[in-house]
Length: 427
Ligand code: IMP
Image 1 (tube, protein in one colour):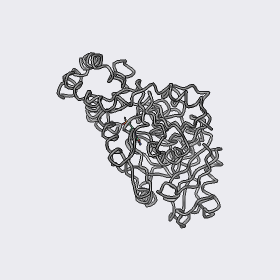
Image 2 (cartoon, protein in one colour):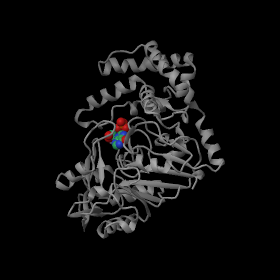
Image 3 (spheres, protein in one colour):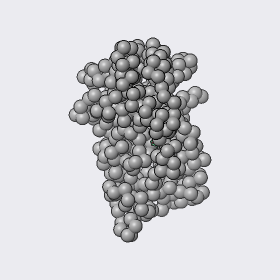
Image 4 (cartoon, protein in one colour):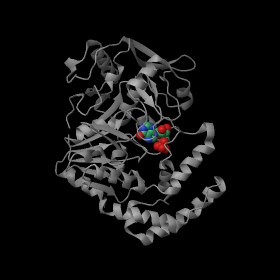
């Protein structure tokens, strides 16, 4: 399986970092295809904890080529800080490549993200305030600044002048914020440019060559299916497409090159930010998930909302990305609960039973979950390395999920450490 896409099946934070990290060990290339430093991956390697935001997790394996694809948005300052932090800890960045076509997050994008959230007040989206949405807006409006512009300071200043003409009006008149001088923005940017220039490359060509040479390439999605701008719970979504199809447009390869799609789902559900969440809990089971799962954001430190696993939403995610296998993470977190529940259907406001995810947001907002309840288990799973090691009730829970979504579960998370998994993935 030379080309595998790893994507989140929920609202992000499914533990993709750990899964990608594991599979990166068996891959020659790891490529990010969307999102930016709104993402956060925590990787526990021995005694070391790494928090990555933009650099693909493969960077921890010497020699693995790590690509930040054209579909991502890159905050130059944040990326430089991440690169410096990794280098200080002895991680080599020699194999990092940034697509020349990736768009750059400018200081005005960050200002606009924060200001627009403030203005929306109780209708806010709960963004990470990293400037993600405003940067993608400029990409679509064709006034964005791209990584390749760092290679041509003259063009860079000209583009900044054009972009800032409109942005300054918005900053000042709509939000009462200070205007930015193109020369100042350019100066800061060019300081980072020195650092980033050696990494900028034609990454679509590099990936094509790797695939032609039979190398194993992993496409690393950020956020999750339910945060997809087209298919997620709009408007409470991110501004890009986390679904597997975007791995093609976000790195510059064709759909026929993808061999396998691995969806990552927690054994329960979490969500940060605002928006509907039918299986959300406000009880002891929810607090158990929050505490045992340490459900606080890597990027913003925010407490995550927790709930039972939603099979209606999971089947939707499987369908949208054509998933061929599933990773079930953090199963160990559920140890110690008397009873566990799986949401098998929704009831809409009129009491109708829905097993397919509703396309209309008004219907979805009014949905309540219908559960199947199963006996829980007490055993510590951290030593389980094969399906046979799982206690019978945990095994029943896993089997019920696989049967409901009709996709094999090839990886199960049983603890925080890098190798605390049941791993049957072939990459
Ligand atoms: P943005 O991506 O910063 O614009 O935020 C839009 C929505 O996506 C908000 O609800 C965020 O909390 C959510 N979001 C963005 N990135 C992540 C992530 O990596 N994990 C979980 N939620 C995320």
